[in-house]
Image 1: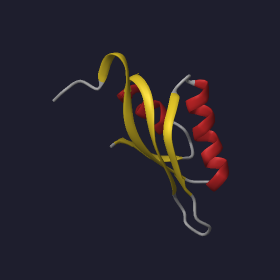
Image 2: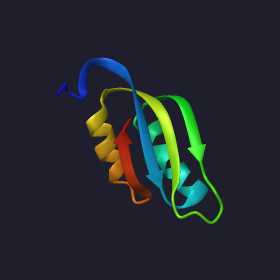
Image 3: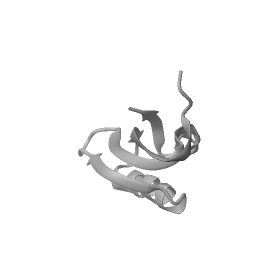
Image 4: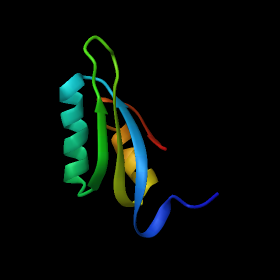
Length: 83
């Protein structure tokens, strides 16, 4: 299995599921911004009355596993996975 760590930033597509609607989205967005990640092709799916919302995006990163693990530590995040 290839390593998830690259020597230079690579585009990685991830899916993140979160609670809290727009507030949860702001938590996720803030974490990505503070981490200095370049975000591309962002898709957000938030529906009224649904417990979980999702973000699918492409991130420039050298270590996608570290990124996913740090996102999973956020209180609003239910899961964060590489696509």
